Length: 203
Image 1 (cartoon, rainbow, N blue to C red):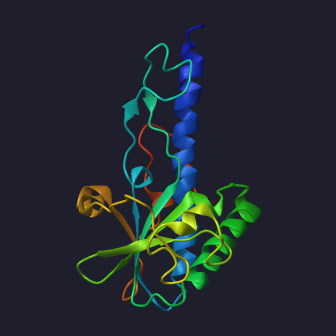
Image 2 (spheres, rainbow, N blue to C red; image 1 turned 30 degrees about the vertical axis):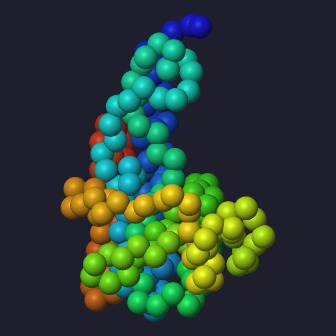
């Protein structure tokens, strides 16, 4: 297997950084849409999209074979969303889909609705309730719907064996984007992406 050239390594690095920047634009688009839903108290970006990327040997070849580290691959957008009620989750589902459709229409940035994971939390203790389901109906009759507790609140999805770790909300791992009392707090896309000079902007 041929070793990647310096140019190929640099191209992969740019791709990973570009994808993080695009995901941050998607986070902003969905947050703006969720801000219009009355029961949304706050929204924060969490996970790898919220943090500076780190170098690691990826899962794909030939970089794995040659043990060549590149920037971490962001696979989806993780949003923590605090709600004061759980009986209108389908409204959040529609808001997410419409925001991503508009993002593609305006900027040709394609992020599927299931790539924006919404973790539902409640209260000051950050009680994890489940994830916003990406299916168009609840229940959908899929294998995922058979997990105990899934759909007890319509469109609130549960995952077998999943635990929401409290450190996911640690100050150095979270990017607050919206608060009901103060409005939009910041735009994720305006946060510099470490490792690149030509930042993706909303212009």
